[in-house]
Structure formats: C-alpha cells, structure tokens
Length: 59
Image 1 (cartoon, one colour):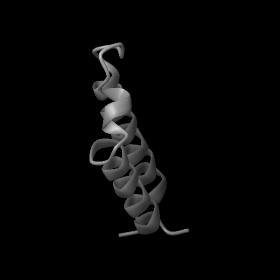
Image 2: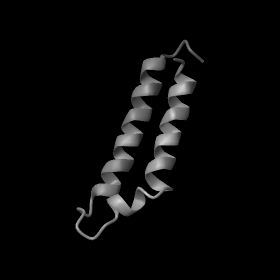
Image 3: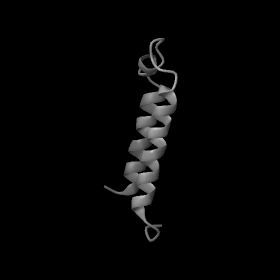
Image 4: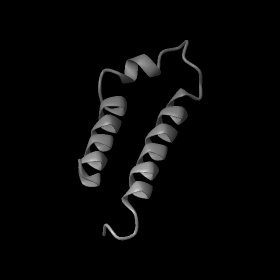
C-alpha cells in the first residue's frame, strides 16, 4: 500500500470522525472536554508517522 493510499485513508477517517453521525458519540454531554483534541491529535500523529516512514527519497 503506497503512502498516498494511507494518506487518503487517514483523510477518510478524519471525515468519518468529524463529519458523520459519529460526532454525536464524541460530543455527548458526558464525554471529556479533551476528546475532540485527542481525536485530532491522533489523526495528526498518524499523518506524521505516514510521512516519516515515507522517507526523503520517495518524493
């Protein structure tokens, strides 16, 4: 699987989490206040890992 495929899957995961009915799950009143930040941080960290594993020579 190429890194572009992984990036696209990561984008789709972000859309699924932040623009779907799943928003009601993580934005409910009993959820911790930091849950949206944790989700964003996870997506950013995964994107960084995908880019880091790609290396400098895969441009």
